[in-house]
Amino acid sequence: MMSRRRLGFGALAVVLAAGALLLWTPTRQLLFGTAQAPRTVVVSGNIEAHQSVLSFTNVQAPIIDLPFDEGKSVAAGTVLARVDDGFYRQQLQIDLAALDVARQQIAVSQSNLAAAQNTVLSDRLDLAEKKRDLERDAQQLKVGAVSRQTYDQALTAAGQSAAALSRDQALVKVAVNNVGLAEASLKDAEAKVGLDRVTLSYTTLKAPFSGVLAVRQAELGELAGPGVAIFTLDDLDHVWLRAYLNEQDMGRVRLGEPASVTTDTYPGHVYHGRIGFIASQAEFTPKTVETHAERVTLVYRIRIDIDNPTHELLPGMPAQAEIALLRAGK
Image 1 (cartoon, rainbow, N blue to C red):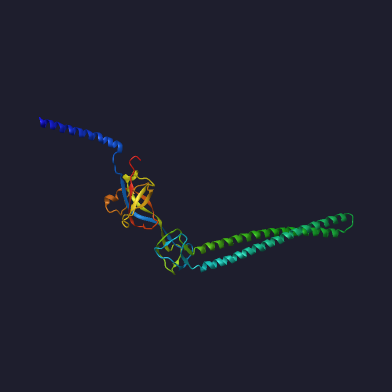
Image 2: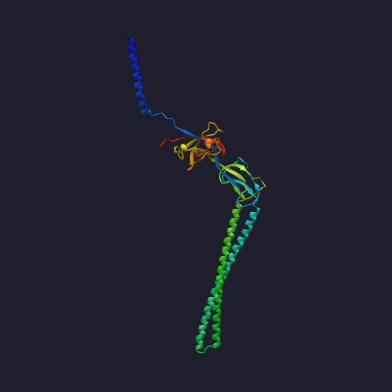
């Protein structure tokens, strides 16, 4: 009898415990929610940076100054190299002399124009006088006060004065054209001098942006010219990680999303980046991946922009990034 009673108490305790568990579980979920670890994806790739191969433009001469070697950090505008500029300075002096001649030619042409205009003014005064003489002689001829010969001489003088005026007016037009030609020659000379100054500036090679000289491809005395590489300049302040994202994860990442970047070179150091680019078209995994199964997988190229003020991250360095995946439907 006692055994049955104990067995009953035991069964009742089991039922009560099960009920309490059933009641506690929904209450806990209601209060705290279902525990779910955030999902992340890890992508691998290589660090890249903007690289610019620097060379001289529109000049060809021996290198006479090359003050920096590889690995040197330089600011934008720093002089990296110079070539012998003697020929280009001489050309500038020649064109400056031609510019001075063009300016003097304008002064001469303007003086000739002023003289021609004054001559026309004198011709008009002379013609007016000759016309008055002719009119007076014509009146006196009617009353017999002057001879026919005197009248004819006055008529000829008036005609000659009119012809002289026409000739000098034509010379004024010529002088005006000469001034125009002189002004055009001056503009041409000024343009040549301006081009000479620009060309002369090309004999100095300056850094177009702040960065690190990754490669030096020239030496003193070598002949530099268009297309002949002198330096390769890397912008290490702003680098990025080129990586690839699997097709199934594409819908769960967004532009601007943060990413944690790490490298084997600096273990434990986390670099903060953001997704700056996601390709719009899929491609096969790059051939650098070893297994064929992974190479035939469709992936999307992404770029993770990383600030690199200490220049620890260098182009070509392997790195990996951890990206938190968004929940489905977001």
